View 1 (cartoon, rainbow, N blue to C red):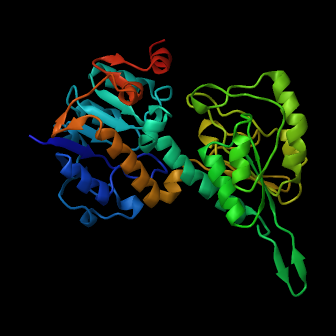
View 2: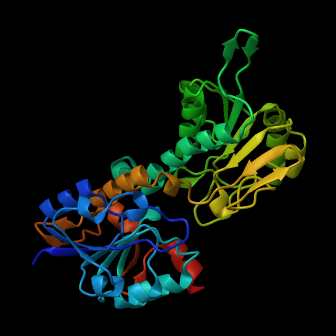
View 3: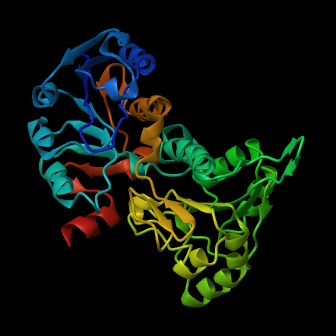
Length: 374
C-alpha cells in the first residue's frame, strides 16, 4: 500500500499559503505516496485544483485525514482535525507549542508523530528543510518593499533637470536571514544601507551586501544561531550608539525574533520620538510583539510624523513563492523517513530527532515539554 498523504486547506486568519504545490506533488508520487488534498487548498495562493495531477480532492478535512498516514499543513490544524487523525499517524506543520499547549497535549495523547517545522535544526545538512529560513528570506525582501511604499520619497539617487535627489538611508536591525535579504533588496532599490546586529560575526555578511555595519561593541551571540537577551548595561551601551543611526534613517527595518519568546525591543519610544519627519519603521517581528515599543502587531500606526508598520505573517503576502519554498522544505523532510513506499523513522538522524515535537505519546522537545506540561 502506498503512503497516503493528506494536504489541508488553511483556515487561520491571514494565511494564504498551502503546504503543497503541483511540482512537489509529482515528486511525492514518485516517492511512493498517494496524495489526497482538501478542495481549493491552493486557491488563496492562486493555485487551482486543476493544476494538480495525480491528486484526489475531498471537501471534508476530517474525512480527508481519517485514514492518512501523513498530514501536511502550514499552520497547526484545528483540534477537530487532529481528533479525526488516526493514532500513530504523522503531522508536518508549524506548531509553536508554547502558543498551542492544548493542541500539543492532544497530539501527544493521540500518539501522533509531529514534525514541527519551526524545530528543524539550523545545521548545514538541514538547510533544504529549514522552513523558517525560506520564509524569512521572503519576509525580508517584502519588508524592504514595504519600507519603500510607505516612504513619501524615493530610495535611489535621481538626477533631474531641476537638480538631484539624494538616496534614502535604510537601517536594518537584526541580520539573520530576513535582515540580510532586506539589506540586499534595499541596496538593489538604490538606498544607502546600514546593518546592525548584536552578533559581530554578521559584520562581514552586511559588508558583502554593500552595507555599512553599525558596531556597538556588544557581543550577544547565543545558541542555535540566535542572539541572546542583552543585559540592562548592554542595552544602554547599544542604545548610546544606535540612537544616532536610527534617527538619521529614512527607513528602519527590524527583524529580531527569538522562537518561543517575545521579540526583543530594539527601538524605544524615545528613539522614535527623535526620528526625522516622514521616517518609516517596518517591524517584521510583530508575531512576537514587535521590536519597536510603539508597534501594534497587525497594524500601521502614525506616531507624530513617523509611520510604524507591524504586519503579521508577511510570507503569506507572497503566497505563491512562499508555498513553493515551504512545500520543497517539507518534501526534503519527508524524504528522510519515507523509503521504498513505507514510513521508517531513524531516530538517530539528528534532523528527525530534533524536529520531532511529539512521538509515541510523549513530547520529545524539552522546551516544549516544559512549556506545555508545567
